[in-house]
Image (cartoon, rainbow, N blue to C red):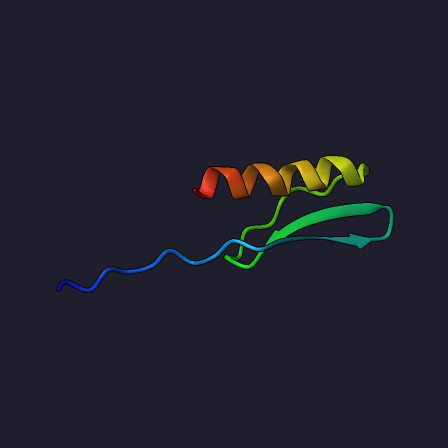
Length: 52
């Protein structure tokens, strides 16, 4: 049976630095700085959706 590589899991979080929110993923991806937490969460959701 051939070995199949598994894709890394994408676990996203949002962090805040000052008045900006950033989306980050366990794969190393980082979204742009956003003043809106909702937009940072949307960036994270879109990244997770694109990964699958």
